[in-house]
Length: 156
Image (cartoon, rainbow, N blue to C red; front, side):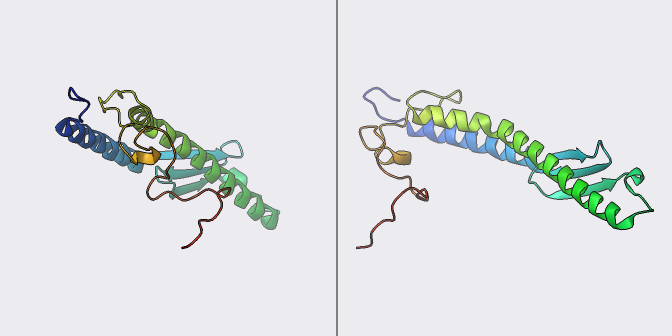
């Protein structure tokens, strides 16, 4: 902030551009990632990309019992589903890990501190992400949906 409490718009815009660039890089890193999940002690492997899309499934021949094809089909079906879910959990963990610095940095700027990226304190901006001019919570952020516990807004 400049003396007198004014926001330095150039500094704010530069910080926003830097954060946008870092966010785009993180999103690309996630899109390029491939995570493998397994089930049945490795009999079935499912590969999922960073966006949660299934890109490959492999089934070890040892998972197939030629004497009971119907039971084998059901077992393999269950193992494929379990391997996919395992991979999706790993993708969720990777997404959390990759995006955590952005949530922490942005949240720190909103809560009154300067983030590691040097973002200014934004709590004094009227209506900014649910804050009033006094920095108290009280308004919903634009574009947010009310929660299930919130009463419906009356129409005038």
